[in-house]
Length: 397
Image (cartoon, rainbow, N blue to C red; front, side, top):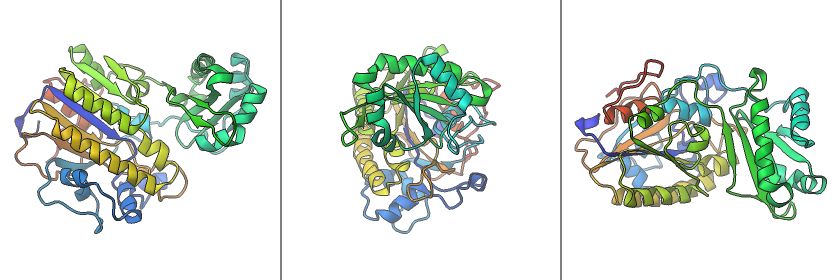
């Protein structure tokens, strides 16, 4: 571990989609020149993220607008994804030691095949409408009233490996929506239909003018193919607390507790409350999804910048309440440049910030070869080792 210091509590916070520049595999994904952080700064040059800069974030991009810091308060570095992917599940899985060589299938080009839709309709008893790649808000404007009136089921996808199902909380009913998604998860375990996640997307409202999605989303994800760092921690009697969609991503594998978040700000408030009030030994693993879902995919750099400013306020509050027993790690799972073409994630390096109140010599470190450095370091902190199937990754200085 850095400076040979060990900690009782580790807090790993994922700014979902916060890339810091395209990597050497970006060409394979059509993502050359993507840079989520730098291009947000270009669009919003007066962005106020003083605490993030002090931690070293601004030193990780080549942008003359943002303030660089000579004496950053945290160890900071860029980390490259080893997996052949650029999405949420593969990114989080790799952090905990799992390499994805064959990414999950996607259906953004033509929608889902007729055979799959027929099977869904047969097994759920619901007629499907939609069946295309779309924004969640736009699909509700287009088809929400039809779903309510005709008692049908909206199915759509995105550039991710997902099958999403919309259902009105009153006319469709939450339990019915969850039942249908559980059936669809079972159907989509066939190799040719194997999406990474089936997502229940409930909404409320009485017309296309006021439909809005609710926090009662539920993800039905494929479980990691091997034992992860989370399971090693749990087996060794460490608490593993997921905040946000961590429980959904890992299908609760290796988690001892899971908390749903209504927003990224809410997720940070939950994390700060845990920091202040829960005495535990282990990991708190947090995903802040609004950066990706609300701003990256919707190509809104101004909204993304405002979310970063809100995060900056909360991370300062978090740091102010840390003790010498606490380690803070901040990273991301992929990029999603809101100024880039399309609405897909972007293949980028992600930041890794490592902060302790006791660190004496924080600095910028070399680029790391895999997101797995995160899980490897967490295990090392608790004197545990990754299993032989996991990615083995030592920190490079």
